[in-house]
Image 1: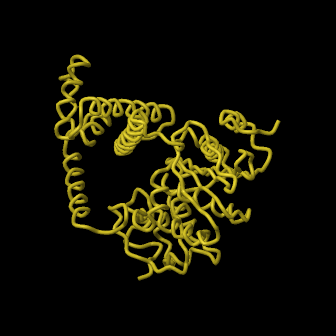
Image 2: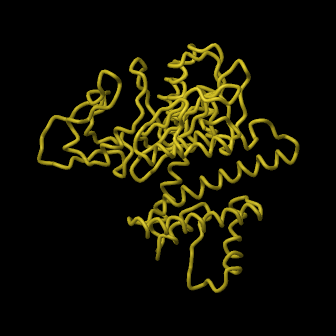
Image 3: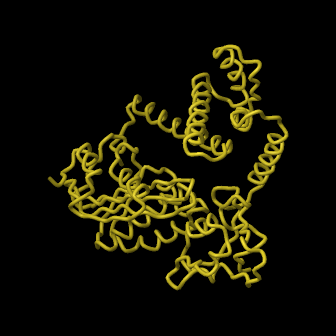
Length: 381
C-alpha cells in the first residue's frame, strides 16, 4: 500500500517515532504519497510541503537514501540488521521495551545515573555510598559475571563509560542542549566494539597473522589496477555529512579526488553512499580494474557477501552499487585500518566542515597536503 507523507505510521527517522507532525494543523491540504515527493531524477523534492512540516523533519526526509525505482518495495522489520523478523529479534525487542520501562521507573538524580543504569552494566549509582574511587570500581566490577567479561575487558568497559560521559557533559556545557543518556550509551557500546576490534588485530599481529591491510601507510595497487579510497564523516546534531574519495595508481599518483558535502541519517548510510560515489567516479573515469578500500567493516562485509549480510538501512545503496558492478572487468573490496585511509578520512571531514563539495585532480586543498606526505606519496609542489 503506498505510504502517505502524513501517515499514522512512522517512516522518517526523527524523535516522534517516525511520524511527521504538521506545524500548521489548521491547514487541510491533501496528504501526498511519498512517491509524489520524489522527482523524475529519483531525488527528493519536498518544496511544496516544507512550509507545513518541521525543519528537522525536512532534513531527515532529504537524508533518506532512495533506491532504484525498478525494484519492488519490501516490508522491513526495523529491529534487526537485515530487516527480517525472527522470534529471537521479536523477543529482543520486547525485552528492550521492558528494560526501558524498568529504567524509566528507576529514580534518577542525574543523566549520569541513567547512563550507568541504562547500559549493559545495569548499575544503580548511589552517590551517597561512594567514598573512594577504588571501592567504587570494585563495586562496579561485581557486575562482570552477568556480562561474561574478563577483568581487563570489564575495566575497559567501565573506562569507556567514564570517557563518553565526560565528553557528552562537556558538549552539553559548551554547545548547550539537553543531556541525552541514550546517545551516550550508544557511543559507549560503539567504542567498546571498536576497541575489541583493535585488540583483536593487535593480538593477531603478535601471533604472526599481520598482512598488508594492517600497515599504517597506504599501499599502492598492482600495476594493472587503480585504487579508490573512500570514507564518510557524519554529524548527528544536524545530519550534515562529508564523503572523501581519492583515486590513485600503482605509483601513488593522484588521478582524481573529491570532497563531497551532503546529508544522511546515520554513519553507515554515509559510508555506503561513499562506496557508491566512488564507483560512480570510476565509471566516469572509464576505469576497468579497480580496488575500493574503506575502513568501515560493515560496508566491506555487505559488499563482499551481498545480499546475505546487507543491513536494511543501506540496502537501496548496495543495490545501486551492484547494478554498476558489471561495468568493470575487475572489482575488489578491501577493508583497511583508518591509519591507512587517512587521506579519504581527511577529505570527508573537510567536506563536512566546509559545507560544500569540491573536486580536484592535481591540486588538492592545502589541508590535505600534509596527510598525503605522511603517506609517503607524491604531492604537488
